[in-house]
Length: 262
Image 1 (cartoon, rainbow, N blue to C red):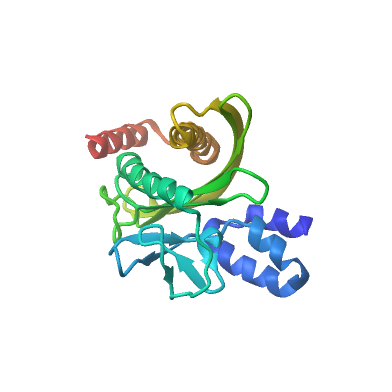
Image 2 (image 1 turned 90 degrees about the vertical axis):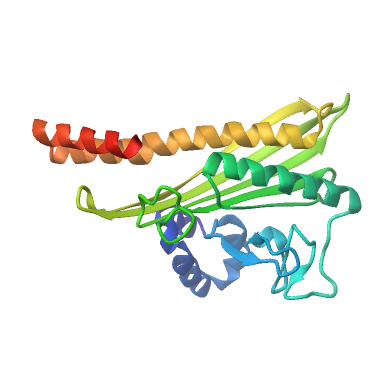
């Protein structure tokens, strides 16, 4: 199991689904652990009742059906599916509306979904999902990428404490893959994933949604910075070390970047 998890951490996100399927065939007795611990590429389905898209994951699945956060119905229909309580459903609806605005402002589009359910012990758990397809054929507004996808999974456990406070345990994962193909850079592919955790005890005077939102916003800023430093920074350092560009090439590259950013 340890070797399997080490292998999945090194597999590019775009190939993780095929790799996971192969591991499930080789290690059927570890299937439950693999499915719960390995982050898979997020799939999207359209809710026929609301007309909105929602993200499929293990947290809104029951049997072979998936619950939509917009209509609170399973697709395909399921008679005895699990549903959140009335209080948590109200929080879930509010979280989806707020997170949809957050997704549009930070990612310039994309699909978001929030699922909330009761914890077995006490409190509740929320899952915040974002999928942004930035390719030219999807909703990439700038059109720089031939293919590109950002997938973020934030799972936060909320446990009430004494004196009107609560403990928030956040686990965040981001899977990134991108491909460019133009005259200046040629065919370039970069993909990877990163996972981080954060624990905080916060007062609940402003509500759980405000606290969870601030933690997710802070975590996403840290993850974007880490991805920029680890993947883009190291890739640039290796390329410039192996093939240092001449001064005219650097000048043309800076002019090209300035033109695209203007």
